[in-house]
Length: 141
Image: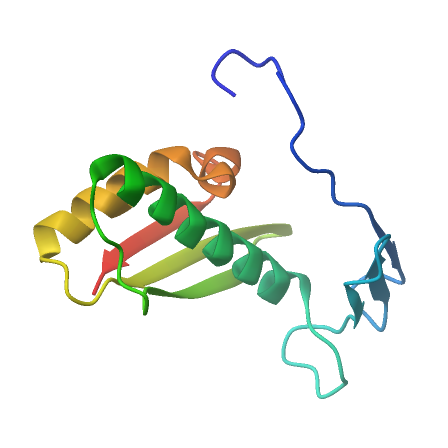
């Protein structure tokens, strides 16, 4: 939000989480999300916040690329894909995140794909929320 004023909330996600990442659970108010949580690398069933963050961020980024592609009059490939890696890091006693994006836009020249990715990077809400807060590497493959 460039001017820090919310004009209109388009959607509000409502989730309820208990127990945290060690054997916790999370569910959405509409019943579409109902998952068990576990520590990264754990053999217990469930997922972890880093996987959920990566899934949400990469899905949002693909949607941003589709919006930008329409404005740029570029036909985005149906098999567009984002492979994301989200690292949970520890520096001293402080936790942080970092991420790597590998973006596949088959059939587009590298220059066109890069311009599309650059524009989507500026419009994706997840990138806006994390800009300057975590290290992110973006690769067009």
